[in-house]
Structure formats: structure tokens, C-alpha cells
Length: 394
Ligand code: LCS
Image 1: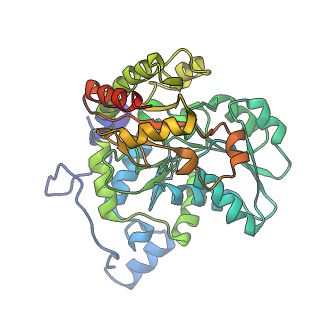
Image 2: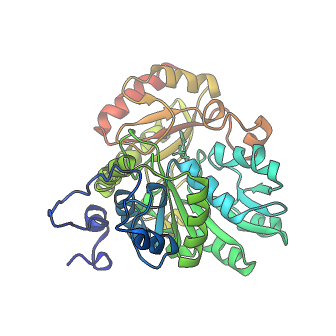
Image 3: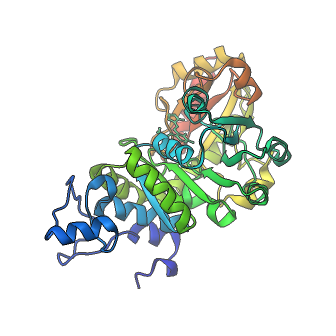
């Protein structure tokens, strides 16, 4: 009955990862311990050598963290997963695994700001090279490939432009050239998109967002399709130390159990809000994958199982108009982050993507007037009323 492969997504989200002990618990216990005792010297030596399975030290594995890893690996159809201290820890662990001096990465130009800045500022100090291209056009990826390219890293939908990259097309290009394809699936969650099924080798999430969904923790996770890649990443993560804490994992487990319910509600709200914004006289443009005016509406239907709840839009009077909206919303909260039950609004050019130069931002279509809205699970009429009064102040 509890074979995850036989279950639908909502059942998996609720049950995957729980392995009952003799107590018959129905929620995963928090194993808040840094280390695990060995029965004797031989037991310790065998666990270290890998001859015997068992827990050693929480940075190298812990039952609560493993329960979350099993759950997300099931939802993403991967071989196994690794919990990380933050989404950025997942990103940098992957860079550290697949890149080194003289190696080259190709990435989406409109990627989450720090996923780009950490390459420009930090990995470059160790000789890592990179090209940020408009991955919405697969031919641009092909043109950027060099002999030393080792990794293709895409984010779709991209933060904050909500433009899409064709995962299947990227997998074909990457594998033709022997390159690893990693997909940041944060904006969709595994409920709406499964990159491993579309040919990606590795998927990562900022758990801080949809998977946890309650704006109360920071965390990340990496899911690998194959054992070999998983083992490579695991060694890097254990030594670099960006691992998770059991209490953090427990909170995410509590959040993931309702992922499909939250996403269903939020994206229902988002479609209504996107249509409302599109018709509003103070709004110039709206980018939302559920609108047929989205430039990649057909691709959204092909690779996503729903349109999600992230919207970007531009208002009359550009940035000044956007500031008026952000300063006047009362229910929608002015804050970065996304994917929670509460609606959040922010201005990427001065907030999440402020570390990019204006030139690079404009090249990536992260224009000054772009406002990003993460639609939550509130009553949609309340959200629309709030946005309407704020827009009307422009
Ligand atoms: N990937 C994506 C697509 C993200 O949006 C973020 C965070 C990360 C990775 C990093 O995850 P973290 O370390 O924060 O858990 N995005 C944020 C945003 O748009 N506003 O605040 C954080």
C-alpha cells in the first residue's frame, strides 16, 4: 500500500519519507542530535568504511533530514536527494561539484541574482568561467558552448522575468556535448514541473519557497537522477558543510505535506489576478504563463502541469508607478521571497537583482519597471481589491 510508485502526487506528498518505528508515529520525529553512538569500535569503523549502513554524524546524514530527502526525491522522480542549509547552498554545491579552474558554465541570464553574482564575484576567483545567455532561445545555448563547458544551469520560469526555457531542448543540447544539465525548479515546485522526467540530470529547489510554503525557514535541496551524480554531489556537500539541520527539515516536512493544496489555490488566485492586471488601465504589461499573451504560452502547456503563482508586471509611470503600488498595498506584503501562503510583492531591480549592473539587468529584461508578485492563498477578491486601490493611486 505504501509503495510511493503506486501513489498519486498528493498521496506521495503526504506519506513519502515516513518510516514508522515501533512507536507507530504518524509524523516524522525530530532527531535533534549532532552525533550517533557506535555499538563498539568495529561498528564505527564499518559505518565509516561504508560496509555497514547507519548514522554517524548529522552533517553526513540524519533520519529527519533523510525523511525529507526521500519525500522530495519521490516527488521529483529522482534517484535520491540532499537537503542543504539554504537554496544558495544547493546552488553553490552544484557549482562546486561540476566546475573548477578553466571550466565553463552556461546559465540563464535572468537567473536569481545571487546564483549569478556568486559566479561573477567568487567562483571567478578560482578560475571558473561563465556565459549568461537568453536560454529562452536554445540556439543561443548551442552558440555559447565551448570545449571547456561542463554545466548548463537553467531556471524556468526565471526569477524575476517569468520567461521559460525549454527543458527537453536543453537536455538534448547538453547531452550531445557531454554537459550536465541542472534545473532550478523553485518557481514550479515538483507539483507543476518535473525536469528529471524531461531529461535534466539534477534538479534543485530553494525549499524556502513553495515546498515549505510558510515563510518560516530557509532551506534547499538537490535531487539527482542517477546514483553516480548523487555520490559526486554528496561528497562535496559533506565536506563543504552546507547541510541541513533536523529541526529545519522537520518544518519543511510539515510544509510539503500540503504542497499540492497550496499550489492549486495559489495558481487559481494567480490566474484571476493576472487577468485583472491585464485589464487594469494603470498596467502596461503582464507576464504570466497562464495567459495566452505569454510569449511561451505553448511551452508552458507542454512542460508545466499548471501556470504557477508568480506574476511579473509593469505599470504606468514605470518605476515611480511601481513604487506607488508597493508603498500602498495593505494586504499584499512588500517583501522579497515567494511561494508562501501569503502574497508578497517586490521590485527586483532594487532588491533581489540589485547586485547586477544596469546593463546586464536590461540585457536580461529585468527592467526598472518590473514588479514581481508572488500570489498566495488568501481570498482572491481581497487581493484584487487591495491591488486595485494601490494601482489607482498611480
Ligand atoms: N533559486 C531561486 C529561483 C530563488 O528564487 C532563490 C531565492 C534561490 C535559488 C536561493 O534560495 P535561498 O538561499 O534564499 O533559500 N529567491 C529569493 C527571492 O526571489 N527573493 O528572496 C529570495
